[in-house]
Image (cartoon, rainbow, N blue to C red; front, top):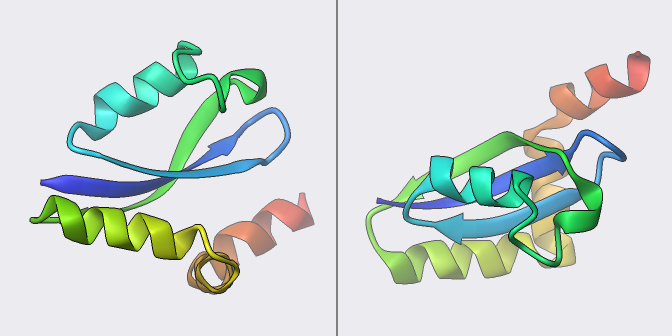
Length: 88
């Protein structure tokens, strides 16, 4: 399986979108600072993922979710999650 995932920085609510074949390992790598692009926003928590059987499908989905249209889709998909965070 290949996973498209979205993690959120606990520090400042920054979002990061990626794909991997080992979701637990990849999130651990992000939280250990092994990814330069996410290191400054430690720590991270997973908020969403999708599973794909094919790596190319996962790559294509990741690329789409990184577009402005894809980010809008995620904001709608996770509307209640983001709304509940604002209320706090």
